[in-house]
Length: 256
Ligand SMILES: [Zn+2]
Ligand SMILES: [Zn+2]
Image 1 (cartoon, rainbow, N blue to C red):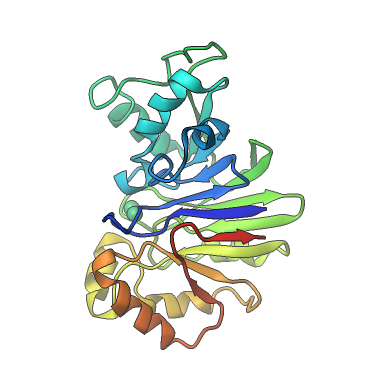
Image 2 (cartoon, protein in one colour; image 1 turned 180 degrees about the horizontal axis):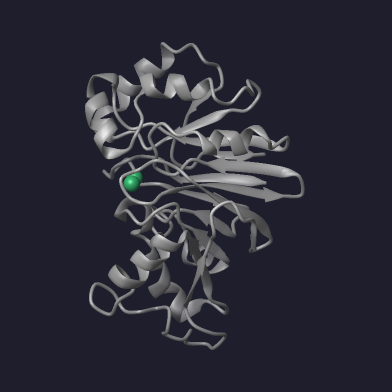
């Protein structure tokens, strides 16, 4: 499984992109940077985007992605998420007000509609784009899901936006093929009150999560740091003395 980091921050600047990861060039996890970081050919090659939750920093590029693919793609883009996420996309995003409803607009060259929305029932594996995808509800201000991606015995987990949570770690503990966890952390320890009310982590709350997955061999790839707090959060993460925590940079690539 090839993993490419398209966006790994909780905010955007000229040097930071919001959450998006690319698996094998055909499956995107969240759409915070799927057009900002991909060529038109790479956008057309996508089969599906799994969305952890409906917040704008995770869905924003679905707008430009759908528009670009409408003119160039040969098959619909599957956009998958839990029920509340799909409902929010339908009502507030592809609603013919904020953006055209690409779930009914056909591809210019034929082959179906531009976007096909797909509901993931929590913890029920669903085959999409050749992967078994599982959504596990986590703890955020709106419905948010961690996503487990599995193919041929290899598994990648993505926490979505979340504060402290339990079920996600229980599911991961039972995954022998787990190769990496994309894990959110957003604010420095002094803003734990803000992390708490906004459903995010600080290095300190993350330290308690590390106890919930007893797999020292599995790297935790850190994303969603707010750009303003990059160095503070990095310093505090380093003080945890956990070799399994890895910082991410735009464009990083991993083979899992
Ligand atoms: Zn969020
Ligand atoms: Zn976010």
